[in-house]
Structure formats: structure tokens, C-alpha cells
Image (cartoon, rainbow, N blue to C red; front, side, top):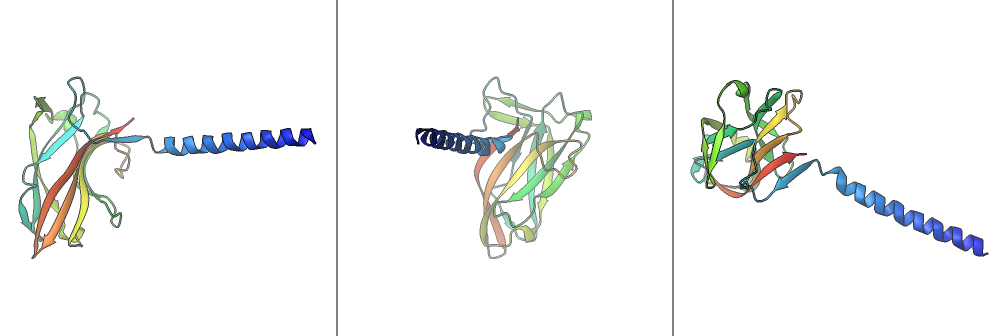
Length: 188
């Protein structure tokens, strides 16, 4: 009888260890990307992608949503990389949409500098957002500038980047935006 009790204890212990292992593994699976809520770099930290939206606090007609963006890409290891501005719907009802691709940026000066927390960019572009993307009276989305491997033709796995989480409101054929937060995207 005692032998049965010991094997039952061993089985229980093995089951607990198995459950704990599965629990730990389930948390480690999604650890490839980390999003930092405090995007300002420390003195020794180097970000690869950064951008700012100059006119985000403006009101736009819903049929002409053009955002002026200053941006930069800093990295010595961008030879086999591509970059893109991508918009993501928070509700998940729409697939990510590439707004603009940036190619051959290693051959041009796309760098940016940071002095006392102020960013200076050498590149500027206009991102056009389709009004069909904003099919509700209010919601949230994000705009990202991400660096991808050149083999990632679907722009699915960013190596690094920068993201703005934005809230929008539509009323009387006009749309307004409000930045909720910003974050650095890193893929370790």
C-alpha cells in the first residue's frame, strides 16, 4: 500500500512540474518583441528608427488625410534591410497596411540626431491615410516606422522601429487625432 502512495506522490509532483514548465514556456514564446513605454533613449542607447508627425494635432477633412512626417534611420548594419511606414488597426478588423516603403536608405543620408531629448531629422515625407480605414466615429490605431530584413517581403517581423499609438475621432466629415503614447520596437 505504501508503494502505491509514493508513486501517486511522484505522479502528482511530476504533474505539477509539467504544469509549471508549460506555464513558463507560454510566457517565453511571445518574448521576441518588446515594446518600451518610455521611448526616450538614455545617453548610451542608440535607436535605429525614429519619426515625428508634424501636424498630428490638426483637423483633417475625412477625404484628404495627409500627415507630414520627419524621420530618420540610424544604423551601420542596414545593408540587408528594408524600412516601411505601416499602420495597424487596434481592433484587428483590418490587416496592417504599408503606407510607404523606404528602399536604398543605406545609400542616402537618412540619419537623425538627438540633443537633450530633441530630435533632428534629415528626411521628410507625407503619409496618405485612406478614409476607409477610419470606419467608426472613434477608435485607435498605430503608425510605425520599422526596419525589416530584406527577405521579409510581407513586412511581418520588424527588427526594430518606432511606434505612435493614436486615438481618432470622426465628426461632421472631419477627423482629429490624439497621440496616446509612443514606444520603441525592438526584436531581440
